[in-house]
Image (cartoon, rainbow, N blue to C red; front, side, top):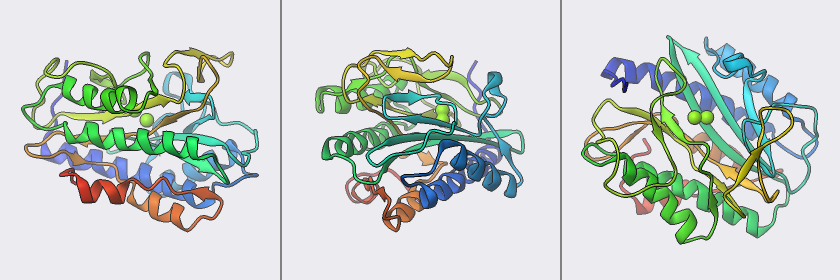
Length: 280
Ligand code: MG
Ligand code: MG
């Protein structure tokens, strides 16, 4: 069952999503070689609680952290731990919050210290594919239009592997609602998009093969070939004309620009120039 949201409910979702982005912005300000996943997890939880919200992932199906932190070959669902981030690491940070009974959900992948051009390209393509998907998330289109836009750009145009086993999702009073939002699919297929549909779009893109497996900790999803993976996520509300992006990465990107220990991914400015997607 798909739950369409009222304007008021969408504002509750936005509030939760923006709290998530404040937590991710704080992460962007402190992330560097030498810090651990547990350090940024604790810092993110403080930001969320300071805003009168609670972490959305903590306790969800038994997940222990505020953040999912997935390092290098980690795709998603990594458990925060005491492994020290190294120069050259790729760290995907996924965050959720709950306020007013509504979830927020957004993710960003950080490049630590000096990383290869190859990795920066993976991050840039993955982030861009998110906005290309959002561009299709308008009333009257089909779910498959979003899926196709992401897959076409990542796989056909850039020869990366798009993960099949994990997908985006509806979001609201539940973290994961119908419909599923795959990052692969066919144009013109699937659910007709209507105003009030709120979904999380979250490309998970591997530098190498698309295949993944679960690691021994029972949570972390890693690439089969151990090559790096990237993950960016926005929660959005479908509208006529253009999607309403409920999360916002602009402060994260602005903060990264001032953090000498992490690299700017920087597609947002290009997207603003070249696309009708609304980022206000
Ligand atoms: Mg997420
Ligand atoms: Mg999600």
